[in-house]
Image (cartoon, rainbow, N blue to C red):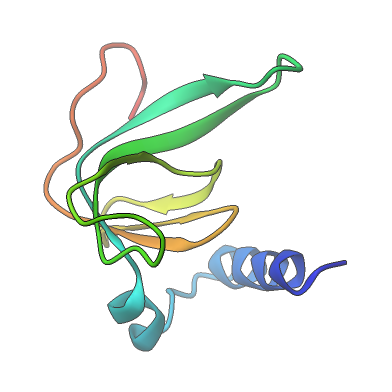
Length: 103
């Protein structure tokens, strides 16, 4: 198992226990603005929820670039963050409403 996979499992277990990401991790996380949750369908037909938004502070993307995250593992809209398969994001502003999405 990779270090990233182990970290993801530990994070998920922590969230299940009611914990929030550490302040340091949140402060270092990229920010998504004008974001929306969408269902992505993989080549094999599997479905997952991803978030599309304008990013700032991402280590591999330009500020203001429209990005699509890896699949969402946990989202906390009340506290403004989400954990995807690959990283933690802060969610800025309001989610763009999607009819029938349930979000």
